[in-house]
Length: 266
Image 1 (cartoon, rainbow, N blue to C red):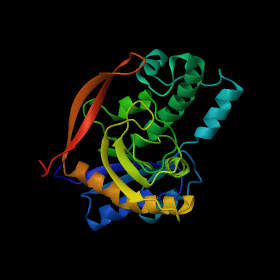
Image 2: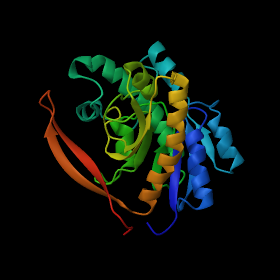
Image 3: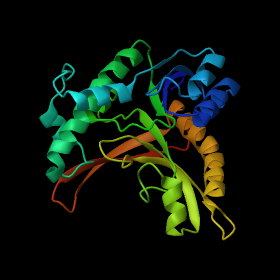
Image 4: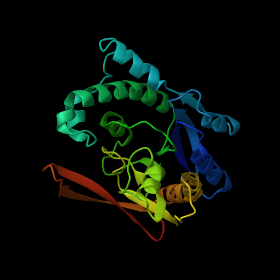
């Protein structure tokens, strides 16, 4: 992309990766600008970073929506265009035997996501960066951001060397398992849990003197460099996508996208 790309960001906490992205845009390391910052928590400290840089921000109260549905499942209706059967057929987070649990999960998230999409769509954006956004995205949301299924545009930073240790506590899982190498991964979002195509990774040694806190500190230092670097590759149009298919152990045929990096922009 020769023009400056427009980046939307979603956060749940302090927004240190958001700050790294903003800084890289302001220094010209990324030919882009952050056009909005959204959160599932109105009290997320990272929203203050957006305010300091003059970036529009907003929040959608996921917790209130989930509590209301648990108290009265008939109190809220699915958003327009939501098809439970289609969502269940595409997702790879829940096993088929978890059908009822999955239905409740995806319904509550889709209701929150419809509000999130309404707020996001007030801004034109080319890339959506999850910068510590702690909510699983559903196929309902993903398909409305990825308008071209062959060109993913939701990117995430994860605190482990995927595919090892997906989930919410990558550094903790890495440390408790006794790994000698830790790291972080930037990947595109797909319908599974941290299973999307990998763009880049960074690693660091874990020694006998390390604590969980020091492992997290090492990991964050790598994240703040890796995330802007991967967004820069996207902005320079240096990411190529190739599709492949394989059969999972449960017999399900899965289509995956693999990312390759061109040496020069196109």
